[in-house]
Image 1 (spheres, helix red, strand yellow):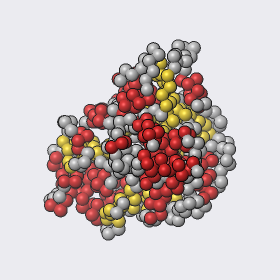
Image 2 (image 1 turned 60 degrees about the vertical axis):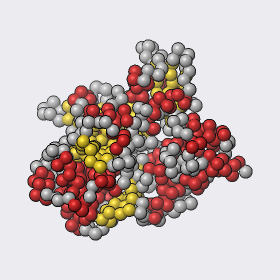
Image 3 (image 1 turned 90 degrees about the vertical axis):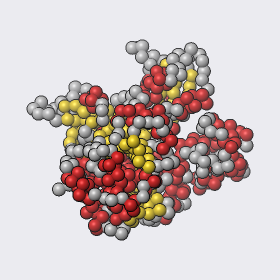
Image 4 (image 1 turned 45 degrees about the horizontal axis):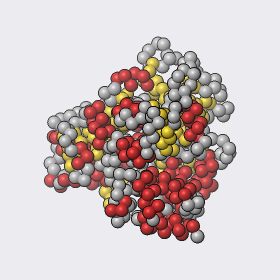
Length: 509
Length: 74
């Protein structure tokens, strides 16, 4: 019975003792060494965090082998890992740490200054002498045996509406559920060599860790800077014989627009998953036509339902003028498309995609209000408690039964793979920084740009001043690409800012 | 060259590009910035930059970016 991913990892290590588990540039670590280091770190965590159990432990490291050791070490200590981005501005990091209150932070000498003067204990992973740690195997096992499968495995932060991200709590069971359904469908067996491009704060990275722990797949950690230089990225895939990638479409669209697959033939790639954003069909077809031996799948799902809840396998060349479907529900997951009266939508009728099943997150950490708003009683079930997650995504079912993504109920967008609440950008600019009187952020899907319209008693602020101010509070991906001053922002009949009018305006830039 | 430096300062006003000997190694430009920069260069100089030319060497200094633009102008 699968309860805890460390139990799975230990079985995997026995079968793959000397096999390389993770590669990062010229550095490698084998499964046995990864296990030994994770156990040692697990013991250090238990000592330093004074026995903390089932509690969040933060990781502030770049994407490197140490980050994998840290995540597994936290799991060995029977705690919950929360990966943080070393590029997040300090103020935002503090907001996260204040909300989640992790027992400690694992970082390295290079990054410790970011969290200087913060009252949380730290472990510097680059100072650990792994060979000289007494591992208390008995204690590790006793603690792990107490874990049940609904205990949290990790916390993932996602944009909130007020400047503090929400920490989504995901348990072991929901990951096992996703892995079992995926493994069955795609015959995962440990021969996968995964080209890991997602930042460690993405759920895709956690999926990759699960592939390593459960199936013995090998991870190739690809540096973020490779995403800037697609040729180098493709060469790295060939050099490492990568046969499976799970990427967000942004980078794949770039590669298609540059027509690079003809220049660098991907010899080993056999399975390509993508999720997180709409992949425009034209650019998708470029991939499809150039990699005719590979399988493609479009996955869809917000973090709150553990990775993804629908899947569309592309088995034949899709028509150029139609968007790709998000497909059909994953096995052991039910998708309800509800209209405004909370009734199931008929074929073709648009409604909100809601999810029911094991895959649901436990909620948002230390945030009961937001949790109650998003995880609600299934309106179709009046007989016993049963939660659904309301995604806020508007979809409809096509005649062939495939679900089509239509848009959002609110102002949430996906930009470069990141989920961003546009109202968070507005809130911070208007209320926290008080830069302008009123503003409205909209997204231009064609150009993939965030456009900020603002009204400010005719005081125009330069792009430079905007960027300098925003740099201190937002990560780079949340900073608008364009700033446009308006004497007065358009209003709708209710006297509210007319977001739709501005969205149309931005679409015509 | 001055124009290139001006564009870079618009994208990342917080950095001193003149003081850096290698923009990529010094971490002055990340993947978002490279995409933005390429778009701006293509629009401003009415050129098309080949994907094969989008490599770290061509973005390491104002001079290398300048040469990349000139190469595509001809």
